[in-house]
Amino acid sequence: MSEPLAPEPEETREAAGREALADSAVPVRFEVAGTDPDAAVRDLAGIYSGKHWLSRRTEGEFSYRYTAVGDSDVSMRRSTMNGFLRGASGPSEDLVMSWLTAGSGTPDTLRDRIPLRIGQPTLFPAHRDLVFVATDYDQQLVHLDRGFVRDVAAERFDVGAREMRFDHLRPADALAVRQWRDSLGALARALREGGTGSLVWHEAKRQAVDAFLRVVPPQLDQLPAELLHPRQAKLRAAVEHIHAHADDPITITDLAQVAGLSVRSVQEAFRRTFGVSPLNYLRQVRLDRVHEELLALDSRTVSVGQVATRWGFAHLGRFSASYAERFGEYPKQTLRR
Image 1 (tube, helix red, strand yellow):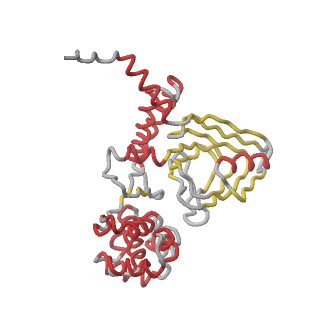
Image 2: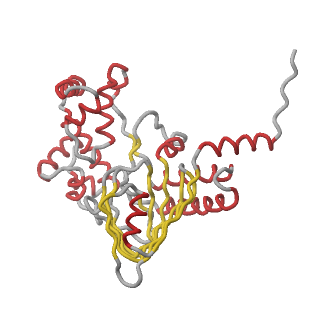
């Protein structure tokens, strides 16, 4: 009989853990800076794969600086500019939390048009195309890899294979914001003391993501049980696309391409499975999103019309009737709860 294996020494296990951690994410550390608006456009647009960016002087001497440190899972960044910046960017693989310590900025001038508030962390609507503006600003950012966020979220939420949505307009709880700030302080200390290959950094960045999930809890749609069978894989792809992109323009042609089916086959699959057309299913999902927001928002700061319009309902009378039919009350009643 062979003898039982002796336990590994603690330092051996820690060393193995450090080696594994070092290979799990790519270090991020860079800085760009200058005093020329054209150089600012070249440098900053390059970081975010931007297009049609414009920068110009305001008052005083123009300057900009952008720094990033961390790894491909979590990185802390700072962007400052004495000047004006405007640009467009496409959907990002990262979730980006941002807040201003000085100046002004609006993350999305096309749709939300809600300016950043000094000291208030806000999730960028980085899942879609946007156009932002910022003037004479000092901005803090944290980039979070979506896959890493999903791994951490799976420990707290029943994520499964479902798409995670994040409401960038959700009001932040004050306690959650304090925990988020504390987690970033711990993240910075871990970076100074151990670097991105250390166990302390690994734990700190998981805690930072946990704090992020308290500020912006994921919204998980419960997909219909009819989609669980393997033979429904193509229809499931179309339905998941609707749930993941309900705030974007969607056509039946889009759904057909996602599912790998003809337009006619997509229409027949939705009617056979759900008893409605694909666009009526999309409309139901959007009504559900309006319902979620009206329950969460404050009637003193938002109107039913603003929320409905954001989700593509242009005719408020028809919208109210459809809403009442689905939820048994009018949207104003939901908002005033």
